Image (cartoon, rainbow, N blue to C red; front, side, top):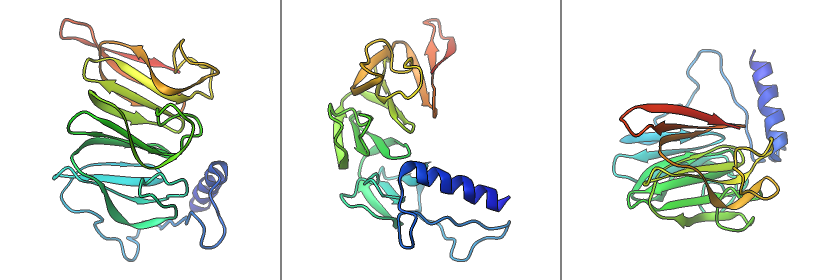
Length: 219
């Protein structure tokens, strides 16, 4: 029911530490099968979208536009506070992924940029200090995928790297992480062609060297 959905969203917002007072960080809205008043196309000429509590769209010209929740500066605009309208953040973006409190983008030149909450080292900048504007992390990146606490990175040489905090058994960060956390990207596998980061697990499609592919999952 809509009441159950609102309760779920409310509990998640409490877990993330959002201000739930009037005029705070989060507004929960829902409707019953009817188009809500004021629903409009947010960005024209869109080539790709990514979203979570915050949202982003890459236009066909390579520009990245962001909007939505911004309690932790996760929109990368240098400010906090809910952003109801799309704002252009970056140019020449090939791919982007939004986690719950941090974001990442790969530019057309293969550079990886991250921003937002960094309490668990998910930005990969070697610190646990959050960044309210995009910070360059590494070169030669083909794809990035963010979840709640980590950032999964696929490089152009088909190696997979990860940074952030693992709140599970500690396996998703690999054997080189200390105390289930790494504030810099660490290598976890080779020969991958696609990656995806879930809430408490990660997955990759690997090439077997003969044109075939296999899927691997770890948590």
